Length: 460
Image 1 (cartoon, rainbow, N blue to C red):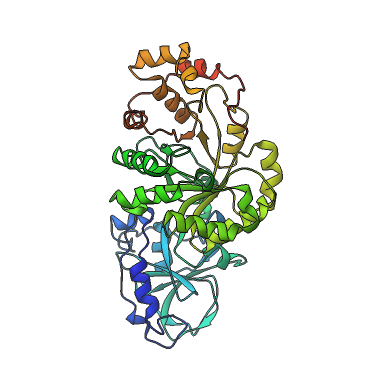
Image 2: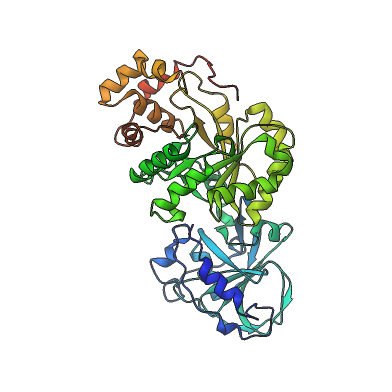
C-alpha cells in the first residue's frame, strides 16, 4: 500500500522517459519496489529458469491468464518463450504497478528474466512486456517506440482497461486460467485471517477486521480517542462527513508517527452531498489532509446515490480512493442498486448487534464477495448497558474471563462481521482490542444468535 510519490514525481519531471518517446529508455532507473501488497514468491527466491525447471511443459491450457484490476477481470494470452514460462511459474501474484507518462504501468522485480529482446517499433494497448530484464510493463495506450522488449503476451480484450488502471498506482493480480475456479473463489474469499487480523477486500486491499468508530467524537476528544486506539494497535478508523470530525481523525493519524499506509481510513458521503459527489470527495480528502482514502462509502440510500457511486468509481481510477462501498443497504436496495454500477462494493456497513442480527442480510452480502461491517456492535447510545447486562452474554463472558463487550465483538468476528466499536474511554478502547486470545464455542454462538429481537436502534 506504499506509494512512492517522490520517486514517481522524479520520473515525471524528466522529459522523454515514456517508452513512446525518443529518449533512451535505459535512463529509467532500475528500482526494486517492496510493499506489503507486492510481496510475491519471487522476492524470496530467484526467478525460475530452465535449469531449475527442466520438466516444464507449456500447453495451450496454460497460455491464458487472468489479470484482475480493481475487481475487473481481463484475459491475457502469453507467448511461448522462456520469460513467459518464468512469469507463469510465479503466479498467482499481486503487484502495485506505478504509472509512467499516462500510457503504461510498470514494476521492477528483484531478479532477472531470461529475455530475448527485440525492437517492436509499435506497441499496442494491452501489451505485456519485459524491459531491461527485470521490469514488467503493461501498456494501456498505443504508441511507437525505439526501445527493445521481450514480449510476454497481450490482454485479449482491452475494453475498459485504461479506465480500470486509472492514472496512479494500480494494484493488479495475475492468476493462471487453468485455476479459474480457484481464482474466482479467491477473488470472493472474504474469510477473516485471525493471524494477521485482516480480511482481503474484493478490491485487492487488506483491511483490519477490528477498529474504532468515531461517531459522536468531536475535536480534542476525537483526536485523543483515535490516538489511544492507534497506540493500542488499532489500524482501522471509521469516520464520515456527517460526524463532523474528519479533520480530527486526520490530525490523529498525522500525530501518531505511524506510516500512513499502515492505517486504514474509512469515510462516507452523506445524501445531501450526492448531487455534487466529485466536490464532496475532494472535500473529504482536504479535511482528512490525506492523498487518498482507503475506503469511501455512501452513508445511506438517497437521491442521486447511483450518480454519487459513479463519481466514487471515477475517483478510484484517479487514485483518490482505493476501495468503495455502501452503508445501510439491505437486500432489496442492493438488488436494485448493484446492476447500475461497475465496481462491486468492497464493503457494506450496517447496524449489527445481538438484538439486531441481520441473519438474512449478512449471508446475502457475503455471497456476493462483499465484506460486512457492523456499526453499533455494542447496541448504540442508550442501549449499551442493557445489552452488556444480558444474562446470556454475561454468563458466556464469565466462563472465558472476558467482558460482555469482548464477547459481543468476538461473536461478530466469528460471524464474519468487521467491528468498529466507538469509545472515548482509554480503558474501553484497549479492552475492545483484546478479542483474539479466546474463541466462542458453537454452542455459545448459538446462544447469542438466539437473542435476536429484530430490534433496530437507529433509523438508518
